[in-house]
Length: 359
Length: 124
Image (cartoon, rainbow over all chains, first blue to last red; front, side, top):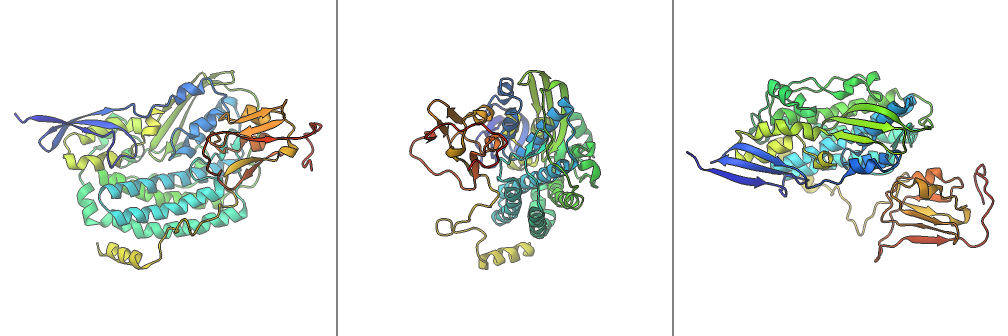
């Protein structure tokens, strides 16, 4: 019988931007089992929201995760609006869509950079992040800050986009598209990237459904699943189809993200073209009461909020299920049977966000 | 493969994408939220900002007529700027400066408290 070795992978590892540990059980080069260990970043945000004013918890939601800060505020604001029966002005819905897509772009570009850096592509990594700088400048110009944007609020948005900002957005989008067009063939055709990703970390469609994969991980396995199809914000009025790849491996999941960047650019252009005039904020009075479930599409997949309030100034319960948590069982399944050298790329392929998982 | 080589060569001979920071600095964008500043002459000490601050970084003392902000606690969300009835808090587009000790910045108002008039747009 082959001797089994246990190797701790993380919590500090060069490919991980955030701490998570996998205890890998190895038989020679093959991983036969992987045990994830969480708990390095717990901050007690859900508990804090039960004592904080519900309007102030909006800023708490934003601080759950730096990369998807817009998505968390969007989900929180939408959930509270549904509880209180507030109808958001159409212009605010479009602005929220534009900012959500900008957030998705910067998140995907960040991941693309980290993924190729893990493969050893220093130049491509810098090129990707140079393209990301265009997105960050768009966010800074239109929202007033680069990461913690604070532009979405309960009842609409705090800021409006003027003709000058829209012009700036369109100009920057053209530059970004040019940069992405240069990067895309490398991701899709480069032989070395293909060698490290094609057929690695297999997750069949049936397994993905059984284990509950969400977001690009599910779409990389051929499942047509995108929470934007629910039609929250302005997505109902925009024309788009989810990007789906049927190759079921790391390569497929990577291509989904790269193609979604182009999709986001297209969505922002559509939203700018059909931006309705009018107010962006309605006044919200009173306190929330009741229960609500809100699902939105984060860059990493489905984000689920459960809110319960009983007319007090703070919430009774705020449960957050983030996409990375849903994608952990599929990840463990993917790692089993892989070679040790492929584990970094496979773990990166679900785009782990530990700050989201542990709140 | 060779597509990338062309890009690498192009990057080698083109100007850098980053700025040479200490000598060359980018000014903040006009819409940027850098830090909050107090225009203490307009302050009527209504405590609205202190109550609505999500980070609890503002302390308004009605008795001593002081308004103070802990810039290292402030999350620059801009709620206080929105709720202020007299526009006594303004958003600056520059970051707060470095300091040796973490302590609040206190501004003090001399003289009497002006009459409360929420409709007045500009007190001066």
